[in-house]
Image (cartoon, rainbow, N blue to C red; front, side, top):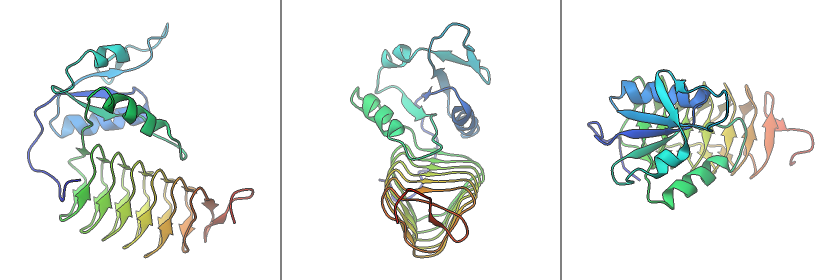
Length: 223
């Protein structure tokens, strides 16, 4: 995990895994950050579109045929709830020797010193303040804010507009929905779900699902 954003642009070209909505956002960030994107991967189904924003969509086998030392991958698959899917994709490609690009949109504000995990994505208009830790393969989506000394475990997804106050801790694989906020010092457990627009003022357990203002357990989930 690097201690702060690296300067300069990695010269290796990128292959974009996925061709849906999140992939389009990621493609835009990569291009504006000066990265060359070779192609996106998608399912070769009859009638499927062949391009995403002027980028060719090719079978995953074409990516597997590339030299893992000569390219980086970018995971263009998002989530709408806690899911092992992104971790499974990463494991598949890492087992074949591929590495994942860390993507920071040029419009994001990332304030050193911070800790950035491999493959994390900090997208347009996001703010990450000093002392924060962004775990491997996290998504800090459009306009999300991570304040000082907050920490995100691996594969956390902060949806657009999420606000984390200082010293908030988010467990691995948790999903925080659009526009929710978490007050200072609160911990949210692994694989937890915070619904869109919720205001979290107390700790959330592993696998718990909360919603509302203030946030409470959703019926049939947790306490």
